[in-house]
Length: 300
View 1 (spheres, rainbow, N blue to C red):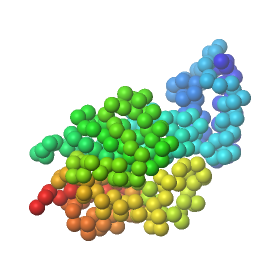
View 2 (cartoon, helix red, strand yellow):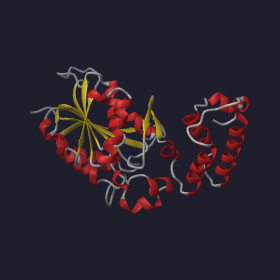
View 3 (cartoon, rainbow, N blue to C red):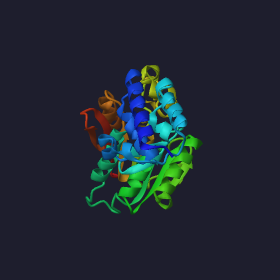
View 4 (spheres, one colour):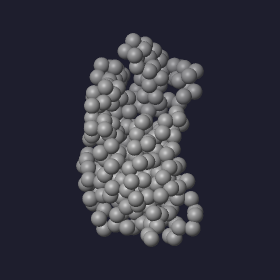
């Protein structure tokens, strides 16, 4: 326990320290919302200052050490708290998984729009969907939440990442709807060839030579396995373009996230493969061409 006035003083110190270290001081309030269960209004009005006791999961000196790591090591605040918000979920995260980004949330909305009733039989909202490179499980969880009649297949190469994803599925009550597999891309899903209603992926897409120049929070702490897309950033995307037609049913959806500047090449890869139709590029909220969507051509 800590008094409101003590926590108020700590917050002022932490915010000043953040500004001095060129870290966004609003992260302090995010951390306090997570660890001290303070709401935005109490923080904005500083009304928590008047409380005699506030429950903290750790002594204040430990919280200070935690915040110092954020500043000195550039450790992302989500890893410090072990939690990241995504859509309406609160997901467990660790340095074994990428921190799910707000822009990736749009993949779920695109999948919903792409699978809207259009005469497909069975409907695309049903059947089997794959999340390849699931990481924290965010995409699989978003799809399971949105498509209650679908079975989700979540694949990751990292056993540590899969453990986090399974924890998240249990926590959110969606574990019965998602099957988890350790392996590389499609390799664990050979029994589902030709059956998938959709495949969604946020694959590694950063060119290898750019990794050291990323923000230190990303370059030093997030898993390079989930970031490094090879020489031009497109190695994994090429693989998914090449192999997905074997797994998607006719009319099945192919949907990925990519980096700014890759859209034209990805659209051309899909076109050249010859197995896709209705190829689309979609921008994120910042106007960056971030997502590629296509359908497997119906069998001739």
